[in-house]
Amino acid sequence: MRLSLLLTFLLSCSIAVLANGEEAVKKDKPTSNVAPVLLVAAGLNDDGSLVEHYQRGLRYAIEYFGNYGPYYVYLLGPDSEQSVREIYRQRALSRVDPNSAASAQQQINEFLKRSNVVTEIKAVLSGKAEGGLTWTQDSPVLYEDVTTNAKEREQNPIENTWGALHEYHHVFQMAHCDTKQERASDRHINSWMAEGMASYSSAKFMENLGLVDFKGYMLELRKSGANIGRPSINEFLAQTEEWQLDNESYWDQGGSAQVYYMLGAWATAYLIHVQGVDEVTVLKEWYHDIARLGKSVAFKKHMGLPLADFYKKFDVFIRQSDDEVMQIFQ
Ligand SMILES: [Zn+2]
Image (cartoon, rainbow, N blue to C red):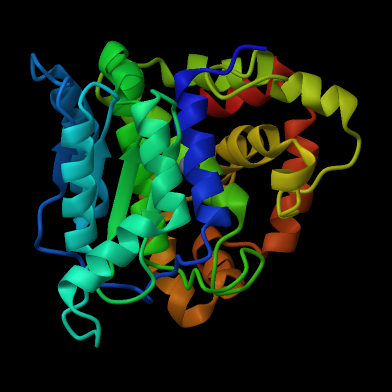
């Protein structure tokens, strides 16, 4: 089974979101006037292409969703331990709360001693691909995209841009949810909404940038699993009689790549191309109402049907043949 670079990005970010108990976000935060900050370890980006290809995606996403932040992007690699440690010191500094009783130096030391931070630095220095999207719960609230082995990104301009687009959709999503709540909570979004909509949007935006054939990609999610994973949607559906988009247990039991990312992307396509909801409403506008109304009411208001009805209709739709489902893009 071939797991691509993108899957590494995608799944690592989700695992970070799910596993990181410190993370949460304020409700419906206003857009930020602070530009994203990219910190790149020595030994990377010698010709400027790593940052250029990341920024290509990030610029597009910010243009579409608005500027949420502060957002720090860490592109790290194993070549210079000194450079990596300096970047982590800067990262610790960015997280200093001026209103804390602890001094800035104490807070920096505390962050650098955290076991997950120590483990992450080790991963960077050994060239392992880990990390992903994180955000702080307490002041100062900020978002971080941490790539521990950015050499892979450097060597793959397409996936680099794609990953930047995908992660930024999560920044936007998390800015409109109460992530202290469970994903099943009405104040948070389900994993299929987070990953499926980010998988759809990033592929669509990649096509808009002239880098990917979107329809071909959606078909490949069914036939091969494309750059997300194996088995494909078709194989998964053939093996799995019962599945639910809003079941949050696939992270632990397997099937998260198929249900949340691939079927989630197709569920997003259904809303836009069968239900006929504007793309910008599905990918962006409805999120603005989640904190105020809850996701159930917000979904019904913007998508025009209750979530329960949507799940039933989508289940019937997605079990059709490739030829039949691809007709929605005609
Ligand atoms: Zn993701």
